[in-house]
Image 1 (cartoon, rainbow, N blue to C red):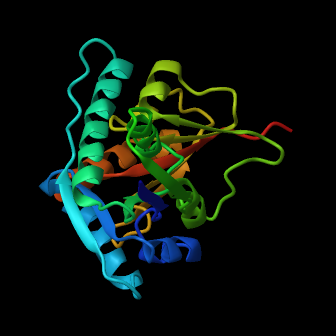
Image 2: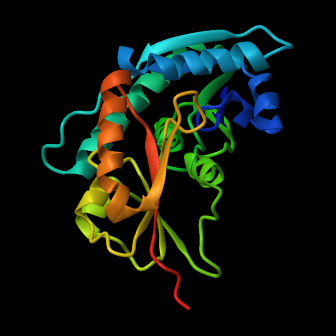
Length: 253
């Protein structure tokens, strides 16, 4: 039986790690770290720094591996992602079989929180469903949504109101929903620019929790173009970007 810990490591600041996460790090024998191309070396380096800083009472190994790339969407987005996840599941199963000895514990260090727009849990469920002997625990982490609200010093919701969490793709397809507050993640196209900006405020953040953090907020019709320009420059300079934003309409009286 192989064991694994899926550990949320926060949005970029090593200080985001909880006491529970640090204890979990010190139970891991083998950290499996995906490499996603040279333009995202920062993400691998942070994971290594976290291990060096917080693992204090045991030896451990780090196994870096190349994560399968997602193909361009051909038939449908859902089918393309399903094929991609199946390829990752095969890679994970091979790694767990070859790199983790029976009785050892593997560690997956998940950016933010494992429950929010991350597929590690679904992929490991696929591995288990295929008959591989695996047991795992999940350690929650601080998400970029929590950091965004903290950095802008705002609550996520209006009094007694709901919050919607969605993606840039769905915002493009569906527009703003009924909730007064909408958090948008995984937006590679600045989908907010296609909205009717009247009366909508935006609180945007990129590289949250890191030394490269960028924050912009204000009425969408006034700062939307600025955000798009700043985002494009930052992505070109660094080679990658992770950003999150909150859209808010006036609260109903």
